[in-house]
Length: 333
Image (cartoon, rainbow, N blue to C red; front, side, top):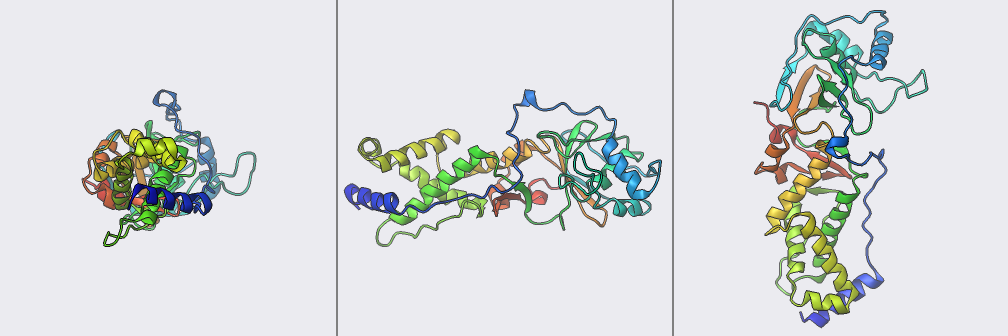
């Protein structure tokens, strides 16, 4: 296809009938990621008066009963580990499972900010012989809990296996913009095509994708950047200027990758770090808790994640929520 024909096709397709790509942002909006020196300081290990009140009210007691058991915790930077709640603790574990404090300023009801199992886990460690002081971390970008000052994000999944949601990313404007550019250029490539006999390019929804979809999409971004005379075309035609500027934005944000696979891995790491780097933070834990009492603490090691050769196969997005297979990315030792 000659360049003039290419220019005409793009102009007709995108000036008059450009498809809109919208990413849902109807989730609770999060505050921007703070700089490391601006993150809120860890609490002092005095527990949570709010959670204590919920526990007392739920159990109908004036003094919170203690567990006679001791539960493992590996500290900052530890590897993943699992355990089962002891039988003599299961009664309280279950009674507290779906409890939550009321919204601020109210005396009844429950806030959606505290999920199932969170107060159960708080009680299990703070009121046991584990030597762990637990505090709630409900302000700003804090994780759900702090265990001796170390972030622990609590998730009550139905099982530990498979890809699990990390929450919506509607507030992450930088990554939203980058995803829109990457998959938008990939859609453009599918419209232009490669001529007769060329492999058909699959369009990808920027709210539902597998990590491996980054590879062909970013290969197409790099191909756009290698178009002959792109700079000259950009000077004369706004549509080519848009292509050039967007390609340059992706290349700059991903630190000038050499190929599609390298770019895909960098994008995956950037995407996941935007969540895990805040909650629970590098060296912290994501606690997957089951109502049965089985708990799996994933030790979050961002460097290990970045070097995982199977990372792209183990992450993605589902309905605007980033997902990752924790048990494969951070396997128990």
